[in-house]
Structure formats: C-alpha cells, structure tokens
Image 1 (tube, rainbow, N blue to C red):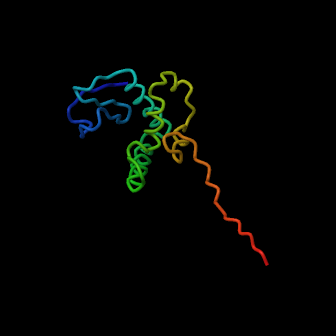
Image 2: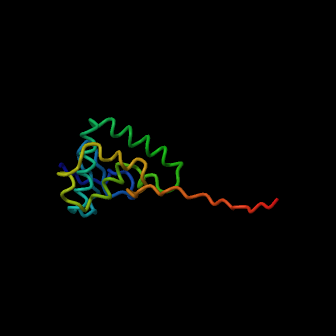
Image 3: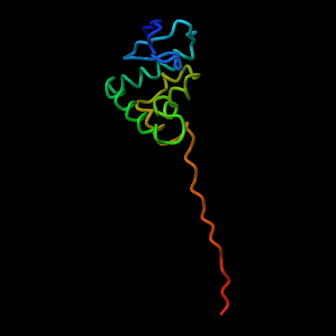
Length: 128
C-alpha cells in the first residue's frame, strides 16, 4: 500500500486518512499504526472486488440515503461498518470472503436484527 502524507487530503480535519484507488492519504500529524493500515486495507479489498469505480458510486449513494436515516451516515455505511468491525483483526483479510460488506447493508453495526415484538392483545371475557 502506498502511503502519502499531505495536509490537503482528506479535506476535512474530522477524518485522519482517506483511501483513493488503493493509495492511502494521511494528514502529517496523524500516527499511522497497524490498525489504521488494516482498516484502509479492508477498503482496498472492497474496491478491488467491485473494480474501484462502482465502490465509490455505491459508497456515495449509500451515504446519501443514510443521511436521512437515524444515526451517523458515515459510520452506518456498510463498507465502513465492515472495516471498523474488523480493523483489529489482523488476519481478517486472509479469511475474508468476497462481498462480505453486503451483510452489513441491513444490520446496524453488525448486530443481529431484533426479533419483532409480540403484540399485546387484551383478552376480553365476554359474558352473555
């Protein structure tokens, strides 16, 4: 992975790094550690399996949709959920199955979907 230190990318100070087509841009004051490299390597794997351009299209569309949903749009993007959940698992890329990010599309933060509530029905004792 190519790592370039620059004060221009990512454009916002809210983010410490950005991965563009497999090139990792980092702010000069950010400490690059194994976890951060693993996180961005997961994004590179996602990009490769989608042949790069579709990754960015899906990422943008999903972000736009999640802007109107509850929670933080960035952290709820399926690509980010997969990367954040597995960034500390340094063997993840060797065991990762293709299109693993798709299982994060519906599940919030990788959690199982909650079971639907049973509806409470009041039983009436009718006497005639």
